[in-house]
Image 1 (tube, rainbow, N blue to C red):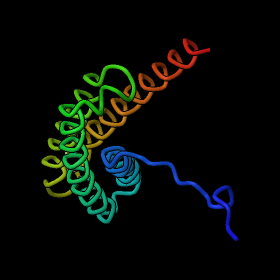
Image 2: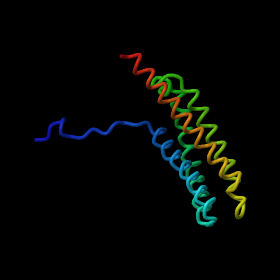
Image 3: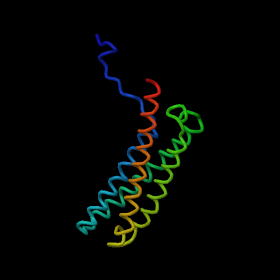
Length: 146
């Protein structure tokens, strides 16, 4: 007989978080492929960057739509404090990535260096700032509970 304690429990994660994780991974991958192109000038890396940007934009737009639905239904605000900074940060990341995608549609060296590489780096910096804000907010809430 199988008890309920022997069955592994998978934590439930909202769809928007899963989509945003995929999008953020694509945007970080874009920075890495841009750096590789900058070092090697191999055109394959620009193709990878363009594909990662497209996938990140599609997933990011879906994640923001899911977050807006959660926000207006009240589910987002109940989870962890104010949701506005994360929604605005996500929109900033999407706008930066959209313009980065336009830059990456150019030909040859100018598709990445210097503008595309700069936009990729700024996008990742915004992601890091949002992550630090979330970590600091979570840490403050944990200390308040204890």
